[in-house]
Image (cartoon, rainbow, N blue to C red; front, side):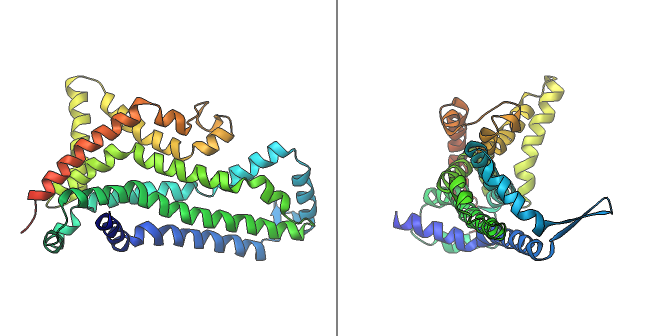
Length: 305
């Protein structure tokens, strides 16, 4: 376990740009934009004629907010908090994509594999540490940044509440912050695990490729889609592949969808129980295990030593 922990630390330090700096910079940019708006967005002009003084309207807005029924107010605040993580969650999927593609290819490209192979660490533990980094380390890192930004979001609008004549306690009471945090973490991890077959396949391609790992990861999928359409005149594999990716996005955003009663995804709701209780999730993990076994075997013999 100590070795595995050290390997996870290695993955973080080698890829901290995508794992931590990317969401942190995004959060800093969004926070700066909100602060700039707070200082300079006092007036709005509509239709080139009507001028609205936001500071004068603020007490009315705050009063209306606090007069809203508790259930509707709580739902609105929680949707706003979950909405702050939408862009972060989508970016995390892109980061995982490139992470998986380079996970076992880059170490052979820069020949650092010669050093790592000289250490008493098995290929199995090394590959699994990279897989766990993709499915757990990345979501957890993004969750931490999202949570910090959500707290800033609440503090930001608390200050607006003060200027509107309120203490801001109603805002925090309606936020259900710990529930939002739990749902964010749970669904970020579930969405990443839902795509485990894709991550494992890309890791296998990364272990095999000597050049252009992206082509080795993408071309076989494209060739299967073309071959199925040409031979069988069907598109089941393409539909299955698209559905797997689409559902990962739906799982990520299911807290908002559930708060909206399924309106976001045409009446379809995805709870953690529905995901974990369905066969596709576990079948996907089984397929991922096969691809990971292939990646471990390939890494053992596919090097430049």
